[in-house]
Amino acid sequence: MKMKSLGAMLAGFALAMPLVAQTPVEVKIDANAGKKLVSPYIYGKNGCVGDSKYSGSLVGADIKNVKLAQEAGLRFARMNDGNNASKYNWRKCLSSHPDWYNNVYAHDWNGSAMRLRDNLPDLQAMYAFQLTGYVADNKDHNFNDYEYNQSQWWKGTVQNLAGGGEPSANGTKASVEGDYKLYLQEWPADSTVAILDYWKNDLGFDMSKFQYWSMDNEPEIWSGTHDDLPLEFTADEFIEKYIAVAKKARALYPDIKLCGPVTANEWQWFKFGNETLTIDGRYYCWLEYFIKRIADEQKASGVRLLDVFDLHWYPTDKSFYSLMNLHRVFFDEKFSYPSANGLKTIYGGWESISQEMIFARVNEWLDEHFGEGHGITLALTETAFESDDATTVALTYANFLGTFMENGVDIFSPWTWKVGMWETLHLFSRYSQEFNVQAISSDKGVSAYTTVNEAADSMTVIFVNRAENDAVDVQVNIDNFSVGDGVFKKYELSGLPKQETFTSHEQNALKVGYAKMENNQTLITLPAKSITALVLSKEATGLKDEAQIAASFVAYPNPTTGEFYMANYDGVISSVEVYDAVGQRVYSLQDCEQMNDLRIDLSQCATGVYYAKVYTSIGCFAKQIIVKR
Image (cartoon, helix red, strand yellow):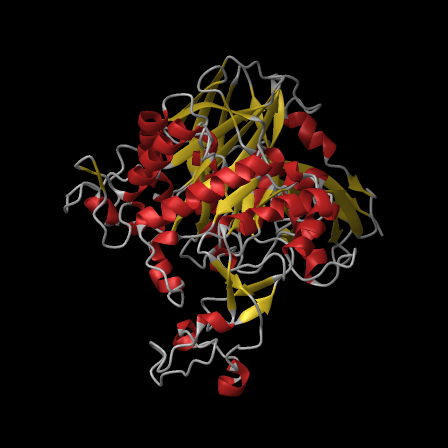
């Protein structure tokens, strides 16, 4: 085989850039268009710290969880624990668990609130009011699940067995129903809102850190989740309870953020059980009915009754293609959602429509019934993504975050938390800026979520390439923002493993590289299934071109007796290969992104001249190495 000459080999090494596709995706960014504040509370999740009694110092899992929250930039935590909040007794720190026989267990919201106050002071926490009229009273009548099956989960955990119930063999309805009077007590509106006064005046909390309060949880399905209670939970009954609690809460805490109706899922967005809801002969789907009823009462009473319109959603879509389109359900009027079944009941019958655009619809209803300028924001406080692939989860989560940034959503707190989500949260929360601006992509498979800071001298563009198998070249053009000519950092997430990779702001799976800007333009390549953040400013980094970057990679000692090191500045080196003078590869070092100092051992090589081929995100460079004995 004919060997390459040394000169030809070096020419092939020098500054090799990725080949550009014939027709790159075009992304046009206008820093003056569509500018809106990004809510920090979209960087949220359900749960953060434990709710046992607090002794003043963190122990166990709380230490790890607080560090992750700090390092990733978590800004919001929904702490009420879903269905377990509906029967929470804040005076006795007890709650009845509807998904575990209705047994009563200790929970201390005071403790979790203190942990957050002391360790995450910049985080906003959400707790909840109870609207069922009943809360836990004692643990004396719990079903002995340990004696029954060593406390193992089975489908029968939803039976009403606390209070003397007896289980059925098939795990459906209890053969003998427990008596709720033995383990619950009545809980009127005055009792549920009195926690505000207790936290402010007795515990001395700064209530601005606990401003958002959920108006209970998923009332449309109380007939199933809380079927131990003696009430018929109609839509009107729930609304009357909501209004009573909202008025009393507003009186105690005028700046409170009341969040409702906390709807259970896509079906319940449109139906409250089997009820037909009408006002003056006109049919209303459940969400619009709730909005109109609350708006009418607010106008009549002069008391603000709703601050955040809060939904839950648990899509069952599992294919990669479906997951990459889930974010379009909320605002995209052109997206036909195949799973939009509840939507078909929106007008009372069964329609063929599938354009869900649920948050866009909610905004229209809010404008119609409250009037423009109402100030009511949007929230999705529970959801889950049906995938076990970390990169797919990361992309799905990124799509939601970017869409909510673009459309001014106030709160986003997924219920389930999977591998890939800490990495994505960190990338968005730590590198995005305060204001979203317009970015238009020529390809639906690529999004460019763009933010600028208040001073308008820093910009972050987060690209999501939803192509499952193909890298994509993207031509970026920026208007109304002056970017300095030169090289800027970019941070990439792709190819995430099954194990958690996020440890801290310094230790994570981000691959750091560079993009070269010239005349407010750049051409970058996005790997398949990737999220890439490009951080720009009016002043470029000190490295102006590829030659300077190449010169920055110094091998030492050089000459060497066999072992030398190379500093991996910002983790930009992906791999190193070493060739002898006739082009034979004698050494290879892969997966260098997470290494700081690269150790290369040529102790088995003869004395002579060698060339290290250094692969980076912006090019490929050659370094001459001399081995002496």
